[in-house]
Structures are given as C-alpha cells and as structure tokens.
Amino acid sequence: MSDHDESAVKELYERLDREAKSAGYHLNPDREFTSILVEGLFANKERYGYMLCPCRIGTGDREKDRDIICPCDYRDSDLDEYDQCY
Image 1 (spheres, one colour):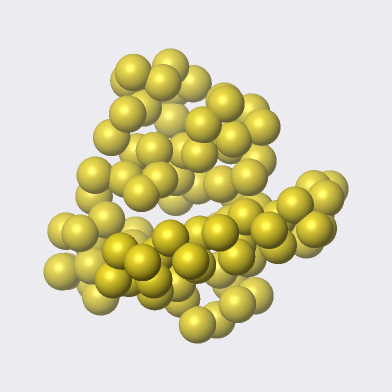
Image 2 (cartoon, rainbow, N blue to C red):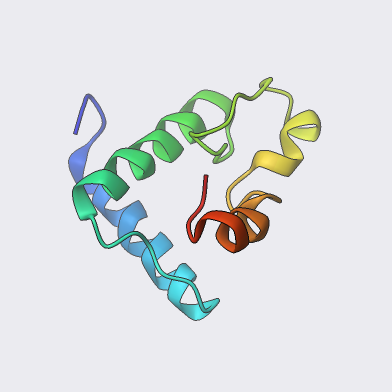
C-alpha cells in the first residue's frame, strides 16, 4: 500500500468483493495485484470524487468519464474477450 489509509483501502476491497459476488462476478484471486487496483480506485475517488477505473485515463469531468466509472461500460466485453477486466 502507498500513502492511503490501509484500513480504508481494505474496507473498499471488502465492499467491492461483496458487490462483485452479489452481481455474479469475482475479484482477481491475486489479492496483492487486486489491492493495487483497489488502491487506484480509492485514489481516483479522492482525486475526482468518483471511482474512475485505474486502468483507463479520465478527464476529471464526471459526465465525460461516465463510461469508465467502475464498473466501467467495458467490463463485460473485456470479460468476454480476456476473461478479466482490462
């Protein structure tokens, strides 16, 4: 973990894990890798006020970034093509 409050990142990870499971998805089982992505979501929420996908480049304008707010519009096509999110 970097500068972010480790407990807040862990709490977000657990929330996202519950939400993913309730929607029929699962987080990557590599917890260390997934935690890096969750930290990126956390950082973007602090930076932009919304959880912008850390794998995509945003503008900081919520309306323009609407398609890349997690879970982004590309999730299902990425899962179909790559068996995982981009």
